[in-house]
Amino acid sequence: MRKTLSLFALLVLSTVAYSQNPATTDTSEVSYVVLKNATLIDAVSDTGKKGSLLIKDERIEALSYDRPIAPPKGAVVYDLEGKYIIPGLIDAHVHITHGTLKEAQDQLQKALKAGITGVRDMGGDGRMLTLLQKNTKIGEDMGPDVFFSTIIAGPEFFAKDPRPQDVAKGAIAGEVPWVKAITDTTDLRQVIAEAKGLGATAIKVYLNIDKHLFKKVAAEAKRQDLKVWAHGVVPPTKPLDITNGGADVMSHVGSLIQYQMAKGPIKGRHDFESREKAAEWKAKLDAVKWDENTPEVVQLFDAMKKNQSILDATLFVYYYFKENLKNMKEDALRQVDAFRAVTIAYDMGVKIGAGSDHMISEDGTLNLHTELKLLTTAGLSNIDALRAATIVNAEGLGEEKQIGTIESGKLANLVILNTDPLENIENTLDIKYVVKRGVIIP
Image (cartoon, rainbow, N blue to C red; front, side):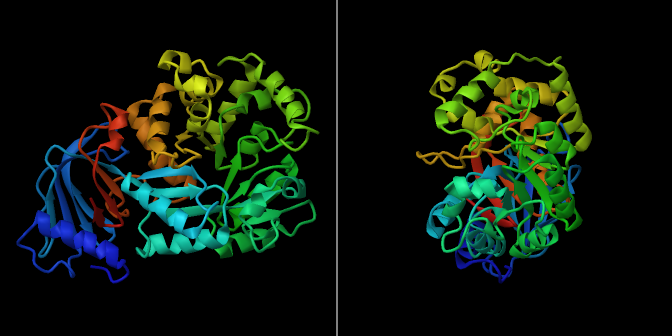
C-alpha cells in the first residue's frame, strides 16, 4: 500500500481486504483492487452497463464490459453482483472553515463517508484550507479532496460585512491572499499570483466589482490558469456581464433573472441604509413577471450556454431555509422562481452543477443528496442530476481530466451503491462503500 496513506486508511483497507479475500494475508503491499460484476454508471453514457474495473494505486487502470478482468497477483477482489458504481460525488458549494480545524476535519470525514469525494469551498480561511487540501490528498486526513477560492471584492464589502474577518482571524480581511480587496488601481497580476501560490483553484468574485474590473480580473486569473467563480449577481454587475466577462461557474439561481431584468443599476446588500430597505427593494424585484420567452431570460441563458458558464444552482438553500417550501409538493415547487429558472436554463442547454451551500445540516444530513433530488424536481433527468455532481462539477474545478467520470486513467474516486440511482436519484444515499484515491472505505 502507498506509504503516503494515513495509518487509519491503512487499517481500513487491511480489514476490508482480509474480509473480502481471506487468502490474502499480507495487504501492506497490495496495490491492485478489482471491482467486478457491478453496474458501472460512468457519467459519460446515459445508462449503466455491467462490467468490472481494475484499480492500481490511486487510479483506474482498466475497465472491462465484455469479459472478466484477470486479477493481478496480490489483488484484492470485490464481487459486487447487484451493486452500482458511480463516480465520486462533488459538492460544488461548501464553507468548511468557519469553525475550528477539528470541526472542519470532522465535517470532511462525514462527507466522505456519504460519498462526497471532492468539495469546492467558496470562501474560507485560506491557511486552514491549504492544510486540509494537502492532508486529504495524501491521506493524512480522511476526507474529500479540497478545492478552494480566493474571495475578491471591492473595499466596501470588507468594510461593511463582518464575515470576511471571521476567516481572516489574526490578519486583516481584504489584505490577505484568501480575502482580497481590489480597485481599478490594484496590481491584479500580484493578487492572482498570491492566490495561486496559496493553493487556490480559483478566484471567487463576490461584491462591489463593476463589469469592467470583473473582466480584467477574470482575464488575469485565466492567464495564470486559475478558474473564475462568481455569484451570478455581483452588484453593480448583472448576470449577463458576469458570464460574458469570463465566469466559469455562476452561483445561486434564486434571483438571477430578476436582477438581470432590473432597470438601472443593481444594488448589493450593503447599498441600503437598513435591512428593511434592502428587503423592500428585493421584494419589488421578485414581483417582476417572467417566463421562458422573456427576452432577458433568453439572452442570459443563451449567453451562459455559449460561454459554457456552469450554473451552480444551490436550490437546497432556498428550500431548506423556507419552511413553506419544505411542505410543498413537487408540482408546487416547480412553480417557485428558483426552480423555474433551473428548468428553463436546463431546457436551453446550460450546464447545471450541484452545490449545497450548506454541506451538513444540524442533524448530520449531507445535503448534496437533497440537492440532487431538488434538481430532478426542477426537471433534470436522474443521469443529468448525477452528472451535475460529478462530470459538470469536475469541469467547474478544471479537474475533468482527473475526476468526474469512471474512465481508465482517472483517479479512483467512486461510490458503490446498493440500489440504482438512475431508477431513483435518492439511491445515492444507499452506500455500500466509498473509494477515495483507491482506498476502500466501508
